[in-house]
Length: 403
Image (cartoon, rainbow, N blue to C red; front, side, top):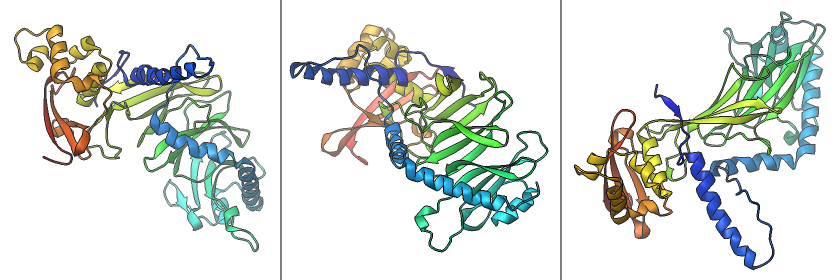
């Protein structure tokens, strides 16, 4: 497994977003000072990752229909509870039969009519009867509208006399359910990971199970959340957190901005992984640190980011000076002069790209689109082992899509 290291350097992806983009925004905002009086905050505005804007809006729009959604939720919960009230035994098999679901022979998720499903998630309260997660949609009744029927995810628990249903969420996107390690004052924690959009960006929702009922205590999809997901990413939990809550780790391919990688579930070895650690504080998961995978593409990104910020010393530390400059007497001064005269595009506000289909085994090629359908194609040479230093960089100008 590729080693990871905590990156606290000036040109990390996070620092670049915080320093470069806010500066541009502040420059534009200052123009309005000549038009009318304005109050400008001393702190620059925070700039969110572009991908987050794409997936934030659908959840915000759903909030506009909160009353209608709440009405459907109450109706759906009442419908499944009415079925459960007819089950007078703690046997899970009886619950499945009442809901029209066939249990699998082996442990796993069962499937019933209209996508209904059931999964035994374990004995959360130690009463000898396991809790069950059920995705279920009420049957069609005469006079009922189809739009009023929505599949919902419920957690079922036997309280000693009857089965009780706790509504977790309406099912709109694919999801996964996980019982988390640890406990909170005797209560158990359950996470539902919702996958959103074509890139299946994961959004965790945390529930607290206590006294045969589940209640939502944190939702990464809310506007107040500090969570950042990754395209084709994942969310994992591990013991060691605070207050009985496990640490949460969100991981996926980094989206640094200055070097754009194809959004593809199979990246052909291109890009580098980003891992953000979250801990439970003030009734929410908050980020406490970020780590980046150290590989050839991470070195390329840091090199591009350092030159973009005119940090020549930082960029110089990422090369093998003698081999990169092809001289026996390399120096920072010579490196700066070479960049300014021969590679000045790295000093401007350009966005470089990794072409779709490019493989890491092909030399970690990247491009810069130009006007009139042309492009610069760069062929870097990078050492194959840590610390992954640049030993050379060749540039060819060609038509976009080929020579």
